[in-house]
Amino acid sequence: MFSPKFDELVQALRILPSVGPKSAQRMALNLIMKNKERAEILANALHDAVNHIQTCSICHSLTEDDICSICQAYDREDSLLCVVESPADVMAIEQTGSFRGKYHVLGGRLSPLDGIGPEEIGIPALMARLQQGQIEEVILATNATVEGQATAHYLLEACKHLPLRMTRIAQGVPQGGELEYVDSHTLGQALHQRLQFK
Image (cartoon, rainbow, N blue to C red):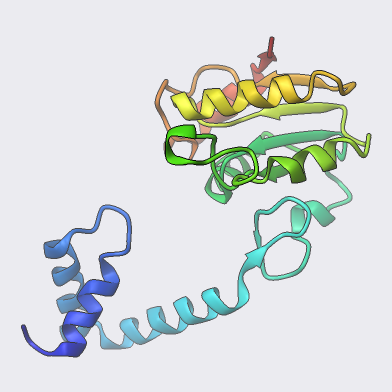
């Protein structure tokens, strides 16, 4: 339309969630016409993030180092592990200030119809971590979606032979909801009111 580079920018912006062609075009126009300096800052920040952020070798959350700051923290409970689907869920729980254990990020949830099984979401890495014997309680904090519930049930069955207390975050999180969109108070309450998962 305006130029091949502009069209390229519009297409690049469309990879963002919920950004359609019109929204991408408005963003591109705003960046180019009104915010060139900020566009440069955005480009540099995106470049740095892509080149320096990786997954933690222990919990699989985001970090710039081999091991994230939460896994390295001495003031957190090593025996308490919260299993979540994504780094966004870690961020949501951390914002509550209610959890002092450690995390394991699955990197997704089971969805057989989409060909996503235990291997695709890193369940073997979680099981290896649990078999080391340091963890006493596992909080299953997968999302309250059908796939999230199926993932929690799969993990419960897979861990039956281990000497662990398995809990599930309390339902204060709406059914079908995503953790990253739940307010901090509700999520904090859900963590405190977790129940034995049977």
